[in-house]
Image (cartoon, rainbow over all chains, first blue to last red; front, side, top):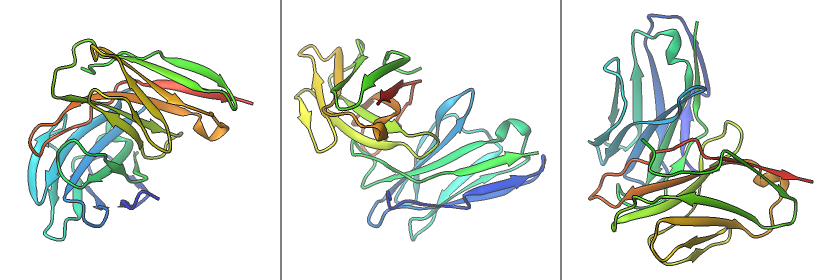
Amino acid sequence: DSGVTQTPKHLITATGQRVTLRCSPRSGDLSVYWYQQSLDQGLQFLIQYYNGEERAKGNILERFSAQQFPDLHSELNLSSLELGDSALYFCASSEDGGSTEAFFGQGTRLTVV
Amino acid sequence: DAKTTQPTSMDCAEGRAANLPCNHSTISGNEYVYWYRQIHSQGPQYIIHGLKNNETNEMASLIITEDRKSSTLILPHATLRDTAVYYCIVEGSGAGSYQLTFGKGTKLSVIP
């Protein structure tokens, strides 16, 4: 158990809908990262937050947004969903935003039908 | 683009050492080498990281060449539970911001 909790574990929704994925980082970790893993793209970095502020942005679509709340949990919002958004979404956390190890949650499997 | 090159797959006999190579010829002075692994569709798991010196922890050893252009992850006594995709990642220690860029990794199969 990495200490990072992601909910829900599975999500099935229709095209055009909006969903919210939630991540609770390890106790004491200030940094949260979101990744997308699809069969053909591998693990893609989406975005990083550090203590409530956006720190780094990767290949995140404009239809996607994220935030980190004062209690340090984070949410990833996916809107206008398309079939191609079906993937595993992982959240990770680390003590700080620098060169320390990141701990990953077990992921949310999103299926868009 | 990933900054590393790894073999697509490797086999290792159970109980033997697994040596996983990684080339990172364009690594710069402030970049670390990280190793993660992903078992089936679970979340990736941190294994070890290093800058220039060799490192060892309870899971593995990391050997980095003197010119830092390549490294080897060593699992000293591979078990069936070590079957996974292993990712070698090069990442800088920029102030408060880092994003692990995962490549395709090496699929390690531990064979009984």
